[in-house]
View 1 (cartoon, rainbow, N blue to C red):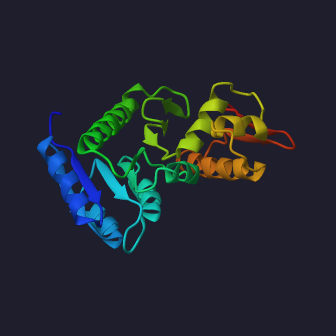
View 2: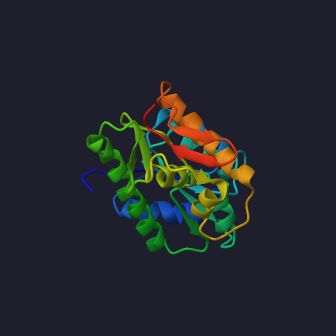
Length: 231
């Protein structure tokens, strides 16, 4: 790495925080540690972080709340969630927090370094993507799981990105809610059609904020949705 990336570790167990910080510092990262959830947003308002390692169980604001706030306010900042329960990862994925990766305790310091480097590589690819932006209203950066409007990151969650990608692959094609659900959740979980509508609503809102003059996700009454980039 040409220069040290700045990392923020949010972990209320001092031994774990110190272990991660020492190992990541040894591998060339600039590391700051915080132990209380309420400290995170004020710190980020004053400092830049390329990546946040965020424990779920924290005093004050919990990791789930913080993940949502960070993704909303600093969409370019990568997030790795840390949990003590392996079975909780599936639940986290379903919450659509926008996290880039998940690490389960107990973990090895080497695993943490490897995950951090992998996520930062993807983030760098995403940062380079605006140079490739074409004339289309929205361009997808597959490597970084980003949707860009005029070079601006829309800050989509993983499910929102997946929905948009599916529809963009077939402009004008009408997708039923059932078809979209199949693409949203690859583990065949049972979700209601209202879940699809909720994700589409959020996706539309994010697109509208960047492209208020366009309506590129269209509803087809009684059928489903389609991507229509032209009027």
